[in-house]
Image (cartoon, rainbow, N blue to C red; front, side, top):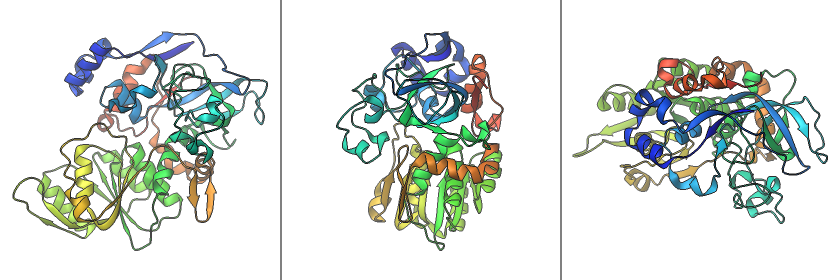
Length: 410
């Protein structure tokens, strides 16, 4: 089968680390650690697994961080190589093990990519998996398959950037007939956004700040509105197309991240009921700000801004995948007595007094919000055009696309 295979090379990794964004312009084809290969289809580990042929598969920020060596090396011990990337996908069931139930060949499905105890055949399950929090599994290096926190980072499962992958039946969810592939492929990132949106209690009088209007930031705005948030949402965006999409998702105000620091801070202060006080050195002090801030970038700059523009006794929710932020001044967190909450992957989620499955909730809400979120997805690329696809996903200001996807077997 065809697949975009990732193979780590220390010389290439160091070159990408050293050259950074210059490598994307100058050395893409020569230095990239991912290439289109003919590889063997992954085998079904046991009778509870099934085979999926991807139809559409998204490019996630974590995929780009892996390829461009911009992410943290923290997760390296829980990944097995070589692997086929791709954990955001909608596909069709092609083969089923003898013990799979509730599905049929040809069913259109999406994938919960976490590779927890259920998937790995581990009994008794760890505390996280017993609480249905498979994404936080402590056994991701054990069991029936090789190490890997998710499909797309495990050598035994395959991934969405290939013609075929395998999944445990507990990872698979049927797609409603009325839902398009374009909407269904957003299920996994939308579940991540729902997990973040439901981590805090919001009141109509609150002001919410969403920093970053990439796909996760935009889906976080959509998740807030889809789950009933009536608070004022203020978003910050870098590009014009992101501003338009943020308003479509439900933002009341969209602020720019461009311009000088003084201009930007003055504009943010006006929208967030904050006072900016010049410092003797470094960035200004900010008093006041948003009740709740969602940092959907997780860069040094975004974290620094998030701490400053969250009001005293407010909450900062970290949504974006961090690299290795440096130079962040943590003083505002201490001085303002901020609550900082991290979010990774999915629930289960608490909606009122109910506890619901992340993916079931995501599919349910996407059934209502599909027409709003569908414009986030750009025209799909073939696997053979992966250089152009990665360029589209990496330079969203130039491409105008919020979510880049591959058409694999559509």
